[in-house]
Amino acid sequence: MPAKLWGLRCWECDPLIQGPYLLPPELKQILALIAFICIETIMECSPCEGLYFFEFVSCSAFVVTGVLLILFSLNLHMRIPQINWNLTDLVNTGLSTFFFFIASIVLAALNHKTGAEIAAMIFGFLATAAYAVSTFLAVQKWRVSIRQQSANDYIRARTESRDVDSRPEIQRLDT
Image (cartoon, rainbow, N blue to C red; front, side, top):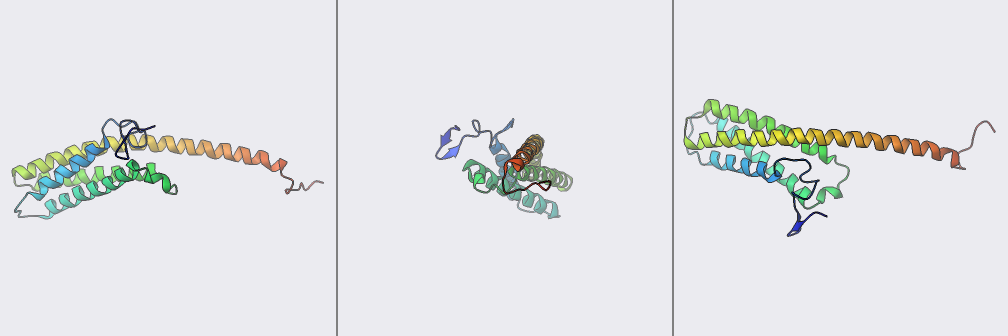
């Protein structure tokens, strides 16, 4: 049973939240939030498009990952079994990795060497690394779930084929 703190499950004890992760899931949140705060402290910019793109990416990654973390922590994902949560986590971490990397490169190319821009860029690359590790581990977790699902489908099909002979409502044609 996972340890609970104010009704939330402990990520260190719970494989649904942590899995084989090397990093706590909150690390991605913290890095995205710090990158967003750093970019928000910039008062003036001349080409602002790169700054706005980085701001959008860091805020979006923070919000979406936060919502998923809350869903997993409160065990709400168990109430919606129609969604493949491993695939959802994979898509979120993969897209966040890609867009954080692009936004950090754009910010590195267009920055004006101010402290806030450099700090945002550094935290953007750190967030990219954290999301990349999570993406790699989410791919492994997704592959395992696909293998387990195909094995379960095979077992179910074998069981159903054995049950056909024992059902009286199904009549044989050769009698």
